[in-house]
Length: 54
Image 1: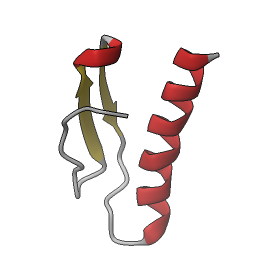
Image 2: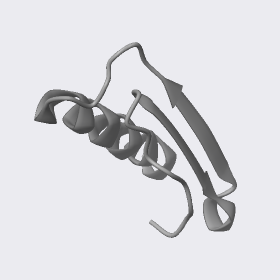
Image 3: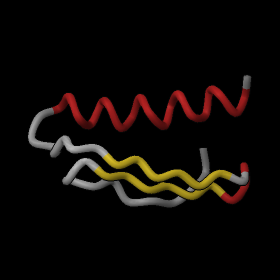
Image 4: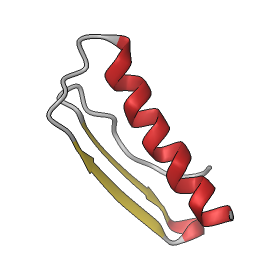
């Protein structure tokens, strides 16, 4: 996974991966005050890449 994007402490995440032609924006209403929302964001991007490669 080669790309750029900030992770947001407010539950937002953006990511661009020009190599794979991927741009993604994840908007949630969950702040990152516990480890669970961070896992949610990580799972979103992992699932997205799995869909590309399947």
